[in-house]
Amino acid sequence: MSNPSLENDTADSPLLGQIRAQGVSLPVLPNSFLRLFVKLNKLDQISRFLFQPGMLFNDTLQWWRSKKRSHAHEGIDIYLMQSFDKETCTVVPQMMIPAMLSGYMVHFHRDFLGETLYIRHPNIRQKNSVLHTLYGHICAIPDSRGTRASLPCAHIRSTGSSIGEQASAGLASYSFINRGQIVGTISPPPETSSVPAHLHISCAWIDEEQQVEELNWESMNTSAKVIFIDPLPFFSGKMDINLQHLISGTS
Ligand SMILES: [Zn+2]
Image 1 (tube, rainbow, N blue to C red):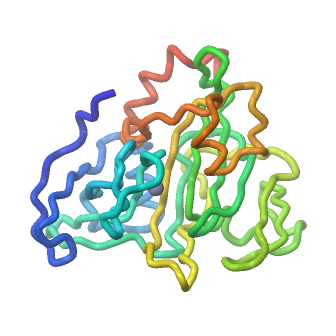
Image 2 (cartoon, rainbow, N blue to C red):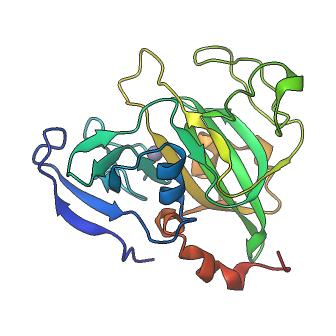
């Protein structure tokens, strides 16, 4: 799929140096993920998101150190932003993450920077697969990591509430989340990590026969039942129109 919303841009900020970055201006549609993200975090001065080589779907570089990735990038990394004044800044831990599509929270597990949350979209299907959106390097569902009674909607089973503790994984039951609702916050990376805090988003067709609870990043990369697709078209909100033919039922 082509990405008509990508713009070539020669960055001139100190942060980016001479590295060429592609930019994505904020889409017009108010429900687009990027607009929801900016609004939720009161980033009124942000006009666009920037992507260096390695940040986009299928890229093969690790953008934080220009080494090869072990797998082609399974999604998009949101890290760099640009203001209307052409100042470049980055996302930071605790920034809130809105759901880009409504769906059911079905799984989460630790990843190398935080946690990855899986949201299932049962009405968006293709053959035997169901669309899932994945949010990586986050603290899933802020303020919900205490006692079970304090969970606002998801009944997340947690054995560790902060980075570095024993892995936490699994959801006791599925909970629905509406587009724009907060799925979590950007996780602070572990102290030993050289990778800066950022948000990873993947979109994947997952075979109906696949037990989602069994998935993690390693298994997804080798499974024929998980097909990653480029998340960028979903960011604009325009993907909603293209999805209509895939949506069964009336919702
Ligand atoms: Zn990533």
